[in-house]
Length: 117
Image 1: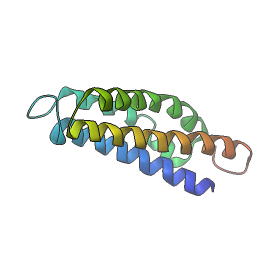
Image 2: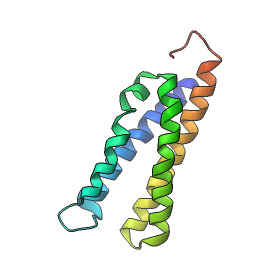
Image 3: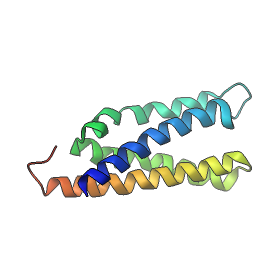
């Protein structure tokens, strides 16, 4: 179960990073040719290596960071139309998957002291 949560969090975080880059540069940028909003991906890079290595503390604080992306996705899904609305819903889904995997991973890894911390 812990391995599944680790893989789920890792894959959803990487997918969210790729989604944000593609969204703001090619798929539906605010301006043609790309948007500086692509810089929103930088905070997602901070926990990436800790998540990939299974560090419990990284899972704990990254689960709070991801809530900003959930909020952005909800707001943009509600306020935008067309492809941007669909991409925003995908952002919401990926952030929820990450959040769920991260909080349960951090909880279950704490109860197993021989696991990665």
